[in-house]
Image 1: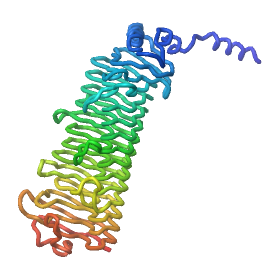
Image 2 (image 1 turned 90 degrees about the vertical axis):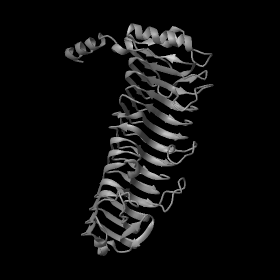
Image 3 (image 1 turned 90 degrees about the horizontal axis):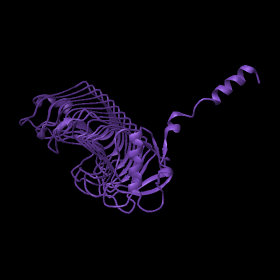
Image 4 (image 1 turned 180 degrees about the vertical axis):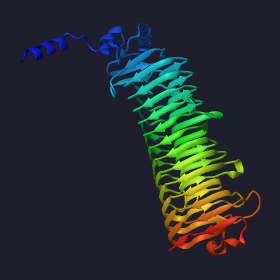
Length: 440
């Protein structure tokens, strides 16, 4: 060994230990013991000591029965991913973060244990009125309510797992902006990720790269349950690049939302509408998603409730069934829109019904259907030709339709077919323009 190399190795050996490891507190050395009785008091003392000293707290593998822990500001709590579990020992949450900042949890599991809370807005871990909260490699399982409940807080939830919750994996009300990325969510009884607001307001959450599967609707209803991602009254939410499969109702549901973007998601085998923008929404971008299996692929609806203003482009929609197993009012449609909407450059295939529908009864206004490719459908494009108010303009141009078994472009009065060849006879209907389409 050369002198230079020996000198370098000696210098490395003389360096101090990694700062985080050297400064960490070990909960087992502070009287916290796994797999025995309730550890709430001992663990709470350890949490407060670590935060006060500005030192991370390490919690070794094991199951710790606790209730209503309060995670303080300036806390870093680290466990063994998959090995360190906090289990509820009463009907209260496992833990809360309330009115605090700079809280980081890594590798901590939360489960119902012998208790856990109930209630629509409760969770195993509850975060409220807090900022700069980070959860990574944590797990949430088996709650009688939601896995994680967030109110009026900003948080980052990354690389966590959620499974087997009686309500939703993650419920948020009036958030200050969440980053929900790279998580795995499975087998929840009523919902995956719920981003709700008490009034229409800016939320600003980003939901990306998550895997969501097997979301049921044990609570019943006609759409409030059974959704992979549900945005209600919240504005400026981005939902991108998620894989969402086997939802009883909808992969992504925007209800009374504003200025939301849904892009690049894969949505498989939904029981109702795969991507839904409904009830007083305004400003939805739905782009470059892949939908395979649903009763309706994409719906932008409810002009009767002021729902309007959308762009639907670059999506692939296929394997749409004639009816829905969960909602008898849903019919086989690839893409549906009512007001101030551009439907362009989508590919729609294998639909037991309409490839694209513009308007329903008089609920049609300023819809453009252009440059889409439609194949293997019962009808290519259906256009409402009802002329009572508030009916407005519809333009259907330059679409390519092949294999439409019962009609290429047809006119509808509500659910009744009244014009079998709208491309030839569009001039009969005010504000309806049909041109340049190729039918084969």
